[in-house]
Image (tube, rainbow, N blue to C red; front, side, top):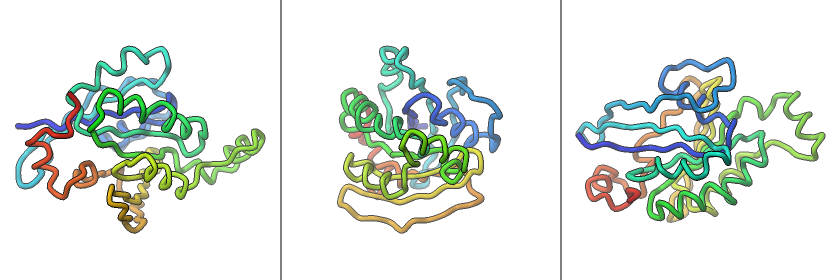
Length: 211
């Protein structure tokens, strides 16, 4: 059985681990969890054939900058995460994370994922940002960044409420309709993850897998 390796990157405390815990258990951790998610594997069907999906969490802190790339070899797709209520994590997508994965895995596709959307309208959070002359990151800003960085797709989600909002950008500049799935966890389809309508062929050829 072939394996699809999905690695999640982004600044610390943007909700990467919570996203994976919520996705795999339908539960939300009540406290900050600094990268204690065990790598998770599940069997999925693609093109009528079984594949093993491996989800790999990473630590976003600078202390791990040398160790983190050790998890990148053989990656099929990255999820590059930022918090919609952390402008610095949004800036680091362009300044740090996409350059890092592009350096190590130049042909491997990635999704841009905006997390913690439940806090975008939280009055306390908005007030704290306003004191620093900041505001939450809008969906339009996320979509624009995804397009500028040539991400396969832009997705917003909340691990707490398990809401997903998705707007797709493909490399031929087509845009999908904004969709809402209020009762669905972050169910990213494998046709979202690859730059082809037949991802199973892409996987077989290995032409986008990180060396």
